[in-house]
Image (cartoon, rainbow, N blue to C red):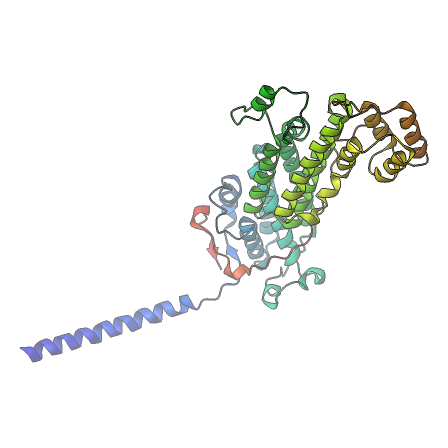
Length: 417
């Protein structure tokens, strides 16, 4: 009986061994299959790709552990497939529905900062993929040899690059407007009106000051409100993988707005033109500078946009009596126009006994010195001014062969080639 059992077990072992060998023969080729960084799709699936990858995709919950611009990379892998087939109609059709899809999503979410940030980032990455894999020498030199094998073989898409570049500029401007609309109501209350320096608000009764700084008083914006709003913008841009150079340009634009709106309000309000208010503004500027440093954004040139406001704060604090004082003002206030300097001097309103009004003769002295200077005779700054945006070429370090589509994208009908 034992011999029979042993023979039976030996037969089972042989059978199982053969089954395992067969299974290995089947699976080994699949494991060693080398991907070439394309997404195979059927022409009739174009609308589904746009629907699932552009129109229905929500930034929240999708971007965790995702490579920056993953949707853009997947779109480009589809472009490579159409190029590989050498099918001009298929490629043209795919590019057109993709661009129309991006236009539609930014139209539908024109006030949604997160969505605009997400699609600004992805449009930028899609544009960069078209450059990086164009086969043009100026872009190929940044690639690895493996990446250069993935360059487009049959078609020149430089016309589409221009269309995407124009679209990215349009999204950027919309994205900046949404940020500005969110932060603008906070600027004057936070930068000018709110008193964060203890004991410098001599005119306000204690009870009023206490109420205005109360956490429960939701109507009052403070400097903290501005910093929190900036941090929200910054973290959202980072989560959506926005290129660091684009992020710096957006922050510079915001800092320009903060400086310009604060300065314009200062020109219109005599009650804000005092030495103590100058101290308060200087303090608030230092908070903004600290925020830039904390986010490692010193190279964004955002600090420079606050220079006119910084000089106005200095002008409110400095002594304004002697000829030497006049000369110092002339030499220091290089970012303010003659009209602006004279306006601040004439508006200066002492709020304590130790302060004195600026005499008309002193204002005339300063004005006489400034008459030699060539500047624009304007008082108010243009708060709607937009710095020209530039899109740097930033090659993607990610190999297309390694990119996988998350199941949450609902693109199971695409085949990774």
